[in-house]
Image (cartoon, rainbow, N blue to C red; front, side, top):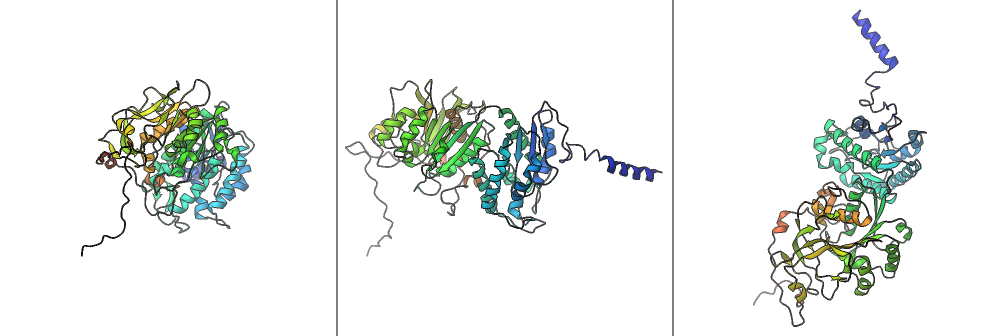
Amino acid sequence: MVRWLFIFGLISAFLSGSPRNNDPFIHAFANPADNPNLPRVLIIGDSISIGYTPLVRKLLKGEANVHRPATNCRWSEWGVTELTKWIGSGQWDVIHFNFGLWDWYGWKQGNKATPQSYAKNLQNIVKQLQATGASLIFGMTTPPCITKERSSKLMVSLDRANRFNQAARDVMNKNRVRINDLYSVIGNKRKVYQKGPDDVHYNQEGRKALANAVSLEIRRSIEQKDKPRKSILFIAGNTKHRHGIHEYRAGSILLADALNTSGLPIEAKVHWYGWPEDESIFDGVDACIIYADGGGEFGEKYEFLHQKVKAGMGIMFMHYGVHPTKEVGEKYYKQWIGGFYDDEFSVNPSWVAEMTPKAGHPVSRGLSKPFRAYDEFYYNLNFDKSCNHCYPLTTAIPTKQNMIRYGSSKFWNRQAEEKLGTPQALIWCKDPPEGARGAGFVGGHYHRNWAIDDYRTLILNTIAWVSGVEVPKGGVPSLPVSLKKLNENLNRPDNPEVVQLPTLDLLKQEPASLPLLGKDGRMAPRKKKNKSKPVLNQ
């Protein structure tokens, strides 16, 4: 009798559906009955997303109706053909989507994906998704197996993964799609989170970590959906400086990624190496951040920027970006940001600065106390002293004890020496009661400093403030910068030298000797080092 009851139960479960299989908080394909008072969310993705979907539903219970296609969404080319079916006829408020692992490994693909074909497919997918009117979030593909994948016996290198992820990042930045950096969520914890070294899937802890990140981004997107988004454009220059220095492209992409994943109503994009040929890239831009040699060396295009600033576009220059020609500085920089680096008396020493943000100002949020960093911090700049709404946002005091290198002999002078021991502006601004905000930042010489959390937060806060975004109480959030992240998108990707994370030893360097000055009040030119072999005495 018991046996027959058991068999009857199995038949009933088969006919009616197992309660477990019908539970949306257990089974990914069991989409919930919609609460009409809650926003509708669609998750599109591979088996990794299948793994975290039920957990996301639990985390967003009472906040959103979370659906997904009842299938593994596989690779990007497959997504292009099946997307209409997955979207359906319903209205979506947020769509979180990802493709990548299948593209990397080539599972079941007749034509194996390349970074180029992947980018083309993603562009097609983004175009289709944007037509829904939903807020879009792209989940950056999680890391490959540590060893060869168990079913395909393939080994996907981190370099291949990075090239595909960079292709995806370029597409998303171009289309102003928010990026959820799930790759970094897993990061160096692959061994802890993955089910095994030959398995791309995740254990319970790994799925929880991903679900937390996905639900957080969805929640932020829901909160920001009806708020106007600020558009930020980085113009990153090229440079002749050595590896790890003046990495404008890599630094801009790192900061843009942080802004795009901050949950703030911001869409940041990066154009690198020269003035954009298509100037429509400036359309709708709320703030332009210029991180480049010689102030960008834009020539007649400074007038183009001037018209944009007059029309309300905020503007910020970083490091060598604050150093234009004197003519450009007097004509434009003083109007835009209130000052610039002047060859006549400004200096470029490298020193350990105790960076002190302006108390009570939005840029100081999340930074409860001063912090130290070693960088080439310019000072003694040419400021517009008649400007009533120009002021420092962050200061530090150069001294004989914290000065590690006095900079180029071309610039060091008596006036700069006399300012040792006095507060100097590392970040300053022009904050008019009406019109665009402007700011300048003298640091950003050493790329490694973007891995200093407080340093990065300070600049993210400043960029957000210049664009008109309300800076959160805890500052603009961003993930810690790993060694791998720091070495992405460098000017010379084939250079074998790894840009190392900053260490405390940098703050403990011995101070340099104060240079002797000539009658003209300037440092004498340094003697060039003789690189030839020494001649032995006969």
